[in-house]
Length: 321
Image (tube, rainbow, N blue to C red; front, side):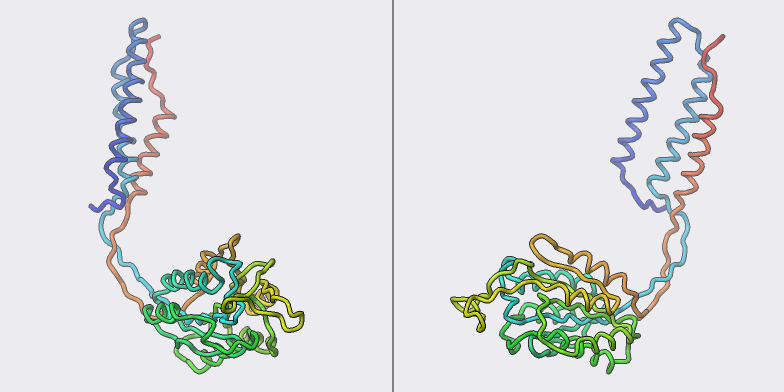
């Protein structure tokens, strides 16, 4: 017999509590016996019955596994592109230590949750580039995340449509997975100076490729560091303020049946993003049948409950008339 929850300390503690309480119960009847005659045989049967179903409850709690059962385990996989905004505004420090540094830290934790999925990285600003093609190699993904910085891409604006279209084309040219197992995680502060976004969203929706967006930053915003100074707005000749623009990101998520999440000092929705991706149905890559022990706790629990109900419905008269 195999025990699923062999917590000896808990079982001994519960047993000790039961013995103490029942000792107090017997002492009560002993004091009554000093004045009134008590049917001791009835007390003995009562104690045996209660001890029996208490032991059955303890056995059920320990989770006895008797015999074996065959269980099929399916390994599912998804294709996921991480589209990461590397425009200069991602250096803003309204999230500590900065938007980009915080994203790098959070993404390294995120990718560990998808070891059976193929992950790829697309970096973008005014243009999009494949930083890492789809791969199962977690070490390669982690290495590329470590090296992310805003100097890797041209910084003449932000075009959110570019990485989405690139991911769509990469998915389209890869026929190893079904459309329902493909997703894009778009990380950006939401500022967009591109065009033709609606057409790309329509293609993604029709292909069943969901886009999960992560808004990074705050609505109040802050200046953008540049060297020893800050980025200057050419129109106003004053320091440029970068703010989180969630409208574009929400629109992208809504039109592709994805979802929008946010990362700031007040909202940290990375766990919710992980859950959403994990719940996305993947393609079965492999399956195997394993032999597993069968937990039979229910039978002991049922027997104990029957005896407990019997104890309550058929009380034993302990006092003589």
